[in-house]
Image (cartoon, rainbow, N blue to C red; front, side, top):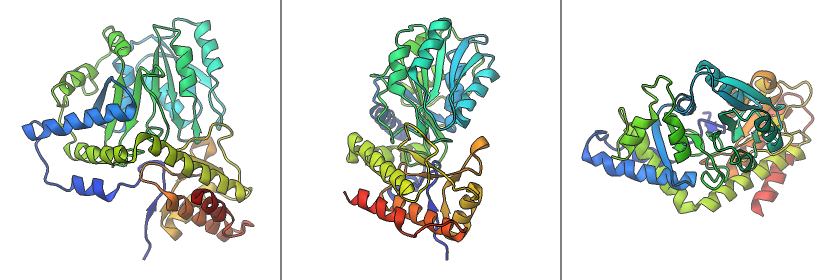
Length: 379
């Protein structure tokens, strides 16, 4: 028998309470039964996003929310700035280019975080830039970007929107949507929110809605204006993902019971323990600065293939983490501590990594990383 453990940065494990809520008989998305369900979900998302703005609920992956953040608020030919420090920064660039936007990339070396001064310089050089796109957590590198610092810069440009992909940062990081001036923030169900894939969430500021009135881009499925109109009636524009939204309410209820500050503290504690355990093993962190609380990107020793580590962990020990992507492929292994994660997820992940490295011939003393994680987590 091989028990399975999901320690990837998405999808993440789903709590039994959430699974059970989704096992109830399905209800019709246009019936009166569903109205209080969606009403509860939209209010819960406002609490989680720390916003008074509408938070749209889309039946799509997070990438659908990213697409909607482009085609609802911009026009072909608009100049935008993209913070490009990994695979998902590249995704913003590709989406913007697909809709005819003129993209200027602020290239950040993989493993490093954006300096707000670099964005400030770019905006000062070209005040016609209509939007700044960034990841909160760049999942491919394990880096958290300085969203608060960027917000302070962008607020000086009233015609420029601040758009944040928080898909893998939401819940793990304290991101204050309204306080930091985030105009559009995208989340996804399968990360910190402890749900299966299938929902995207997008908060939209009044500044962005006003900007959206001038957008002439084609819209059909991702039509945020119609989604907002329906949300006011506790509906979605098209068929609601009823089962997932029921699960969403249960997941938010669990987070509310824990308390937002405690949720952030838990993720910070788990991330710190994972990073220090990695260092105790003599391994390096791929994120050279501002490591994320969602996922730890671990540099593999010389001669050890990170993809083989990922494969061996999955096939021999039943643990699914994540390998590297693109230029980091084979060089790193990524261990998540996101959403429905606790002390023993970190201990299990570190113990298994030690065993696989030893199995692959690396000189590692078993228990070294685990001991460090235990010490910190007990404290």
